[in-house]
Length: 262
Image 1 (cartoon, rainbow, N blue to C red):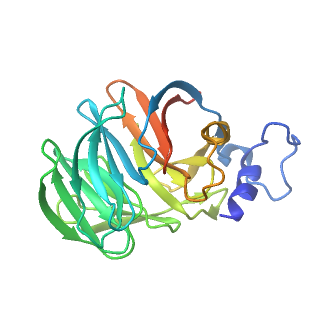
Image 2 (cartoon, rainbow, N blue to C red; image 1 turned 135 degrees about the vertical axis):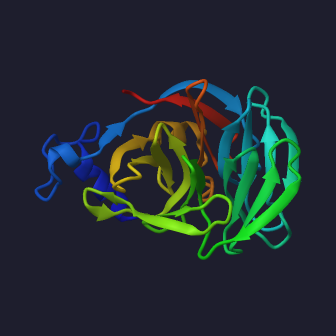
């Protein structure tokens, strides 16, 4: 997203940048903080997994893997990265975001307009529901599901029917920010990957305002897959009980546990 670096510079001075804000920058109290994560631990991750959704549920990581003909929903072991179980998403569908609701996993499809439901314990397919538009990221926020579609708008759905409840217009410094991809709810806020950038944004779901930008550039550089334009950061999981935050990317060989300052 070409606009994003400019909006980020308006948010706060980056390391090594001039301290003065651009003349048209938003007031200081509304500028998002720029956060540099600390890597707590590194774990193996399937380097063939085209990660679209990631979540933590009852002691395991679950992942939705994309690409037509290769899409699946899987459960894997954190320590070893070993896939413990998987279910194939129907042929012709491109698997996308993943969320959990009442011990059922819900996975999106990119262009299919179908949200599949899976038993979290067995990964058996137990239902489906329709929605309009593209499916990118998905997360559970309270009693609702929140979906991204690559635009600057998040859509809030009823988790049982996928009926739309409301929409959230996402802005940074008063400007819309699109390319919102994988989502994860963390302590009432929403973290989102910004597609093809080394950044996460933290979104206030009440106002849609970006309250923080997480700078993943050092982690992306460590992964070292710049020759693969599709191997972007994508995948956020939050272990609420253990207070652990995990990130990975498409075709990344590593899954990172990170800690954010503050």
